[in-house]
Length: 135
Ligand code: CMP
Image (cartoon, rainbow, N blue to C red; front, side, top):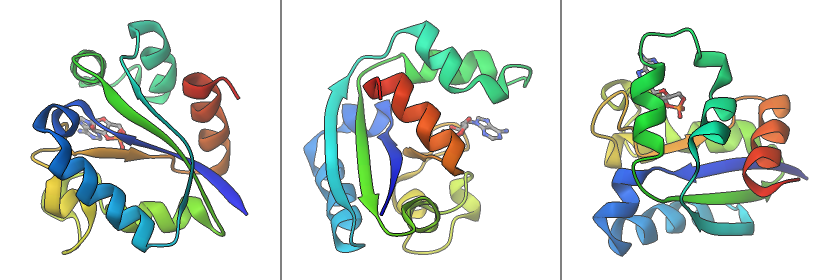
């Protein structure tokens, strides 16, 4: 069994329950178990730490401002091969490049407002879960 971090981003949470429910249903249908789930307003410092690999990118300030703009839904998920499977389910970072039927294809609006985040590799999953859930 492997755990990964999944985050429903502010614009989806702000849009209300229907999109949240639809995304959680996709995750459930793909065989993931929700181990922990919380509606969270994240502070700037942990978000900067969370996205530290992008610290020098031109979009970093906008990205951090966007993630702290409203509550997110933070989720710890579990299944075999969870990291790879969740990345497959959500699709490419840019919704315009995401495969049909993926979460970002269906719910993403732009490269920044791309609906959801999922850990890319095992060490990111561990770090991200530690930042958001404390372990
Ligand atoms: P996410 O998977 O959460 O990882 C980094 C985030 O930065 C990404 O999704 C987007 O929301 C945001 N972002 C904004 N611009 C870019 C870009 N040019 N390349 C990658 N990510 C970007």
